[in-house]
Image (spheres, rainbow, N blue to C red):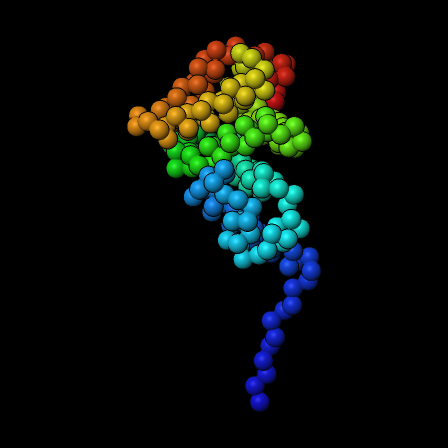
Length: 216
């Protein structure tokens, strides 16, 4: 006699997590295909196979889904940059070469930078949403600032400005160039970003052995 093994029944928490992930994946697909403004809350729910009520059980608004997507995307990008910069076996020239290769790949993900710009504009119009968005963006800027600081520490140099300021400039340059390249043919992204890093490294000053930058 054959015995059938029943499928494990998901707990309420597991079901809710599954629903949330389905909504996030549906939103990612539609945002990339149609843009943030061209995608409605209803579109996301229908694409995922759920009702609008299921959407509201997981997210307060459409912007919250996009913010979650960007958080995940930025975390992956930051971790990949961290792996390159943190490789102690690589000389700085090798690190810059690997970073330039990584920057080349960004043009294939231009939709993310465009969506990030859309979200920034929405934050300007919505004070209630702006607070949560600003918190996420500050964390991103801080991670990039830490990576820049580590590069200068490897060179035993002091950066020419606060690493937070350099990070803000670098991130703005990334998003601006991605959007610009999406409407023009010349490839400027990777060489310009690498040039920016080389320029700030050249502008740095030699740090003494007991300076904070030297020992970071």
